[in-house]
Length: 489
Ligand code: HEM
Image (cartoon, rainbow, N blue to C red; front, side, top):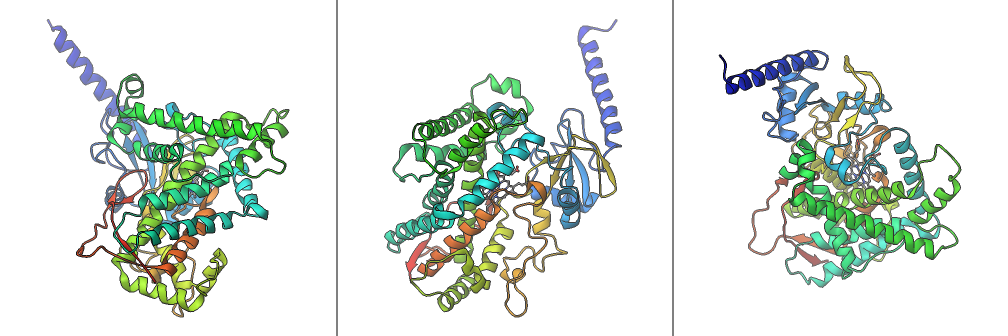
């Protein structure tokens, strides 16, 4: 007679075998890839993360489209410019969905722009884009706001008097204030406590999911939701952010202005305008989440790219020197730098593009979900399948970049030194779901970088010879903290 333990073991073994067979059958319907194991899929092989290095290795084995299993969930990975283009540009509509992980579902829900799909996403995104575009015009000029913040930053850097300092906090505050002006209609002083807490909240919410706790939450959501741990602190930061936005909304409602001046003004007017439309998704929940999405999307991204840019300048002084010479020759010292000036500064513009390519802060990019059955690279992909257009594999695609693993501004210059656009330049992704803040980020990066390089020579602190150029892995690839000296020119 079998004992209870033997029966239990036999039961578990049969379940595992059944699951293994089921996975083999499911695999046959998907692009090839490493064999998934019951429960853990390929997590073991992937070291529990979608690292760019691991995906490159798998590409050399399985080609430019393959499947990996994040536990029980298959994710189809597209690699290289050709496959990514077919996925997100040629089949833009079919691949425009966004999967909602348990962590984000419990924290924010399916609201706003970043985490929605279908009708809600289309309405919220279109509206957000229209508002950002219209804020660029007229007296509430977005470019003027960016110039003002850049000048504040110049003053702060000048006050360091050539002594070594960590530029991170100053840069993050300046960039955060631009998006605050867009959504709230005002900037914050650096001493403002709620501003400091907002910056901290943005940081925690962005970087948490890539931590072991974030991945544990996605694997065991019910359990984690009811247990203490750092994830509860992130939920509290998220609540703080939502409350801060809600307070701003109340203030806007009390002080109703004439013409709309910022995103909240525009959104409140839109809720009123569409209140009798049954297809409208304009309501306070989506408004608050849209504002939060813009704060999250518009702060760490641009500021981290700028931090990489300064790091490259101290690492490659000969490139910095060439940027200085170009700016000096093309711009008067008192000239107010505008985005239009990039046409006079092809080399500087190429350095900024190369920074975006080489630092590629979103690494392998952001997952998508198929909204309809489709065919990609000859494989039938079912509605609901998760996709990862691997952006790293595009901006480092050896077929499109002469020296992908070298910081080389010549990637964006022709033989006569003219600036050239590159089709495989996709750090902002592409297609219907391309980064909503791309234009804003481009203007910010150009105006900040050019102002800083006109005013200062950046150097390592005395005695420091080595710089750590490795990234810190997270939802955004950050440089290790560093100090530099800003020597006035
Ligand atoms: C260097 C700066 C930036 C980089 C490299 C960057 C990159 C990206 C990438 C790769 C995506 C994912 C697109 C996809 O799903 O394929 C994205 C989405 C997004 N970004 Fe950015 N971004 C930057 C700056 C900004 C700024 C300044 C804002 C805010 C104004 C912003 C707001 C957003 C939003 C709201 C989305 C979600 C779009 C959607 O799901 O439809 N980003 N960004």
